[in-house]
Each structure stands twice: as structure tokens, then as C-alpha cells.
Length: 328
Ligand code: PBG
Image 1 (cartoon, rainbow, N blue to C red):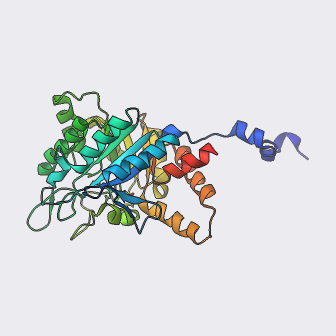
Image 2: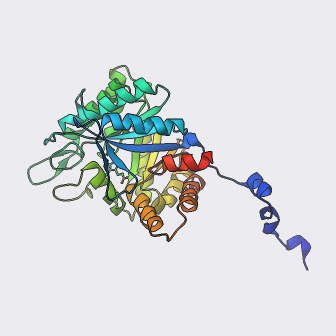
Image 3: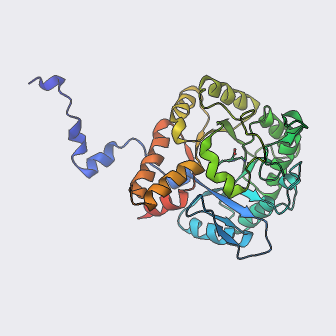
């Protein structure tokens, strides 16, 4: 037997205390961001289950506050808000209305939970009648440059309402610069931008579009979101966003793109966020409801893999559950 050549990896796996001692990655409550869908409605009791996302709800302002209060008690430190307006139009004007639903939600949450980090998704698709992320020309093309000012106005209205971080998810070219300049010009030079820098045109957003009522009425998002086959392009997108002033880089979806998270981690020093999207959530939920998998262990393994791949932040619909498990 060649003692010196013989690696006994099991020595460090024999006892729980030793395993804990050599564990390389761990989930902290501060890593987690919980997304919520807030609906503009006169019914204060509105709390509608999202069929494609078991355990998730569309919430009125009042129900949102209640839900967040319970989560904050469990240690939740950050939320991401999506708004569903009463009225939609071609320009998505409710996206940048000062009294819009997300703006109201931000004011309400910051008022009640000043320490909570409130992040807003900046996009037009939940607010446009056609469900696209920008201004649509006759013939169907989504126009890049005319959309930028609307996105910047949306971000500004969120920050004026009190948002701590804005997260543009539209994938128009140049939008980070447009947001940065508008925020700076209006006295918000200190507000960070979390860019959906590397966002793929993914089937994993399917359940979200029911949740956010943002399914495009025609066409798809392939002219702005990335081709799932590409990774060099991801590095270009991330570099461009950093140049334009992004503070945090997000990769989306999460699990099918752990290689991209790792490449960004190895290439850039900026904080990285992984978005564990609706389809990733619903797959686990469906399997768990059938009794096919151990939900807690599976979710914790997924969360750990985001950290191992190099993410600092995890946006996930499991955030409330994970906090509950961490508190056990
Ligand atoms: C666009 C947006 C989407 C998601 C977050 N922001 C949907 C899309 O691009 O179609 C998806 C999130 C998820 O699937 O959980 N505003």
C-alpha cells in the first residue's frame, strides 16, 4: 500500500462537525432576495394563487405588506418587486407613473420597513398592451433607442418613491448608461443599478408570464434576450454593462447557466447575482408535490450551487422557505 499517494478524502467526511469545518460555501440570509407580484386593485384582500407557481401569489398592496411583514420577521432582508397595473397601453405609461403600483408598493414597504433593501424590476412588458419590453414599431420591431428614455423614467420614478436598487431587465442596448445618467442628473448618483446583464431568451420564464401577465401578444423576445447557445457573448454583455455603470451583474436564468456565472466570476470583480427563475421554481414544486423529491434538500443544494458557481446574491421564489429552513 502506497500510504503517501493514497488520498483518503473520507477522513474529512466522517463526522458532522468536521464536515461543517471544511464546508466551502454557505447560504446567508443577506444573500437572498424574494420576488413579489403586486397588483393594482381596489380589493385590499386580493391574494390570488399563481397556478403555475404553487405557493406564490399575486398580492394587493395591503396583502404584500402583510406577507413581507411575516418574511421580515423570519429574517428576510431584501425584496424584488414586479407590478401589475390596472390599465396597459402601447407606451407602458404605468411603468413610469409616480402613482403607479410599484411606486406605491415601494413607498409602503420603505415606510414600514426602512431597513429592508427594496429592489425594483425595471421593464415595460408588464405595462404594455402588447406585452413587449419596449416601444413597438408598425411591423413589430421593438425599437431600442426610443425605449431607453421610458426605462430611465421608470427607474427614476422607482428611486423617487424610495427604491434602494433598480434592476433593469429589458435587455435594450445602452439602457444602463441611460439609467445612470438620468439618476445622476436627478440627484441619485448613490443609487446602485443591478443589471440583468446576461439574460437569455429562455423557456424557464414560462410560469412568470402568467404571474406577471406579461406574455407577448405576438412574437417573442429573441431580438433582445440572448441565445442560450452563447457564452462569449455573455462576457461582452457584462463588460458593456460595467462600462456603462452597472454595480451588480445578474445572470438569468440560474441553474442552466451556472457555467456563465462561473465565467463572470473569474473575469470580473463586481458582485454577481443569480436569478433562480420561475420555471426552475415550478419544476421543483411540481416534483415535490408528487412526492418524488425532498424539496428542502433539493432547494438547499440548488442554493449552494449558486454560491459555489460564484454568485454573491440569489434571487429566488424559495427565499421565504430557505429562511425558514435556516432558522430551524
Ligand atoms: C421582464 C422579466 C421577466 C422575468 C423577470 N423580469 C420575464 C421575461 O423576460 O419575459 C422572469 C422571471 C422569472 O421567470 O422568474 N420584466
